[in-house]
Image (tube, rainbow, N blue to C red; front, side):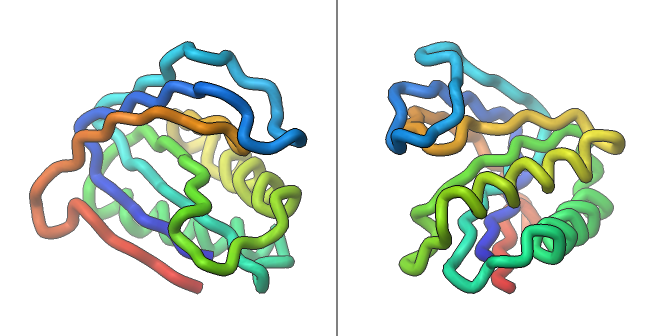
Length: 136
């Protein structure tokens, strides 16, 4: 698993069209916006087969980063382009969904559509902790 944690002033995601036949439904061309948040770009890899363990680790990283930057909103963004060895789409979707489930009681959570081509605009802050990457 590779994740990129970003302290974000604002992010807008616009689903344009499905990239996978198995992509869950999304509201095409309808913007998803979040301000003053953490954006978590994530890519599951071939070895990420234990959905519970991987999602637990992502949650741990999110909570540790949140303790440093203090935001209450999280945008989960599936971003396969972080890896050259992507995992199976079905497992990647499960990890995304399980991660969202595990944090939604503590944070306001939005998820960019999985398996879609997306347009996005992101404004990342410029302080020393504004960008962190993790690999596990």
